[in-house]
Length: 128
Image 1: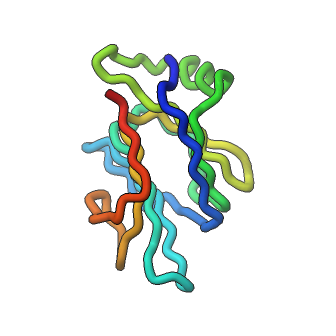
Image 2: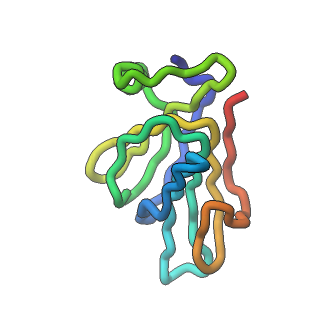
């Protein structure tokens, strides 16, 4: 398993696990700051592996390094050749989480986020 994308995104806001949909393999992290009009959401699609906590303070998402890739591989995750995965490290004030998915989308929302929220897209990366 190897990453083909170089991802480095960060926010000093606090994010919480908002929703996980097992049927669509979607994970949604959201940050709704009362001082700001718009919230920020991070949506992972095609999630095959997660090692997470519930709250992320000062979230930074990067491409997983070699050691982190090996940790995901050691979990027994098998990647079909037709479906490559992004393996991402979620850095936060208390450590690092890992996620393997097929798409990452970061955007803003008004009101409450849902897994099919309309975003002002800030970043999107998908495997091909």
